[in-house]
Image (cartoon, rainbow, N blue to C red; front, side, top):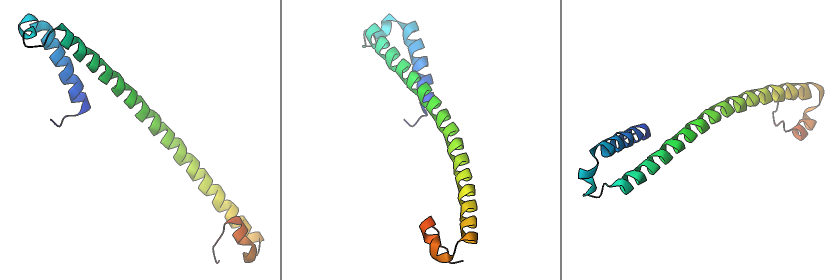
Length: 103
């Protein structure tokens, strides 16, 4: 069964609804109140974990934007520093700044 997590959560809700409305006839097959209770607990846990995962995805997306913005700022500042070092100092001193350019 290759279904999405949301499909699985929906199937669980539908099954619980059906089991609760069918009641006794299925209990003799092992689908009793204890089983329904276990399914409810597992379904609720799945729902909670899914909600937490979605919140973490949103936080990660926000963090990625911040990281990328900082990266761009660092690149801009390093390029500016490199340019000024190359203008003011002889090539022989560039290496101490991490500059390996030949020009």
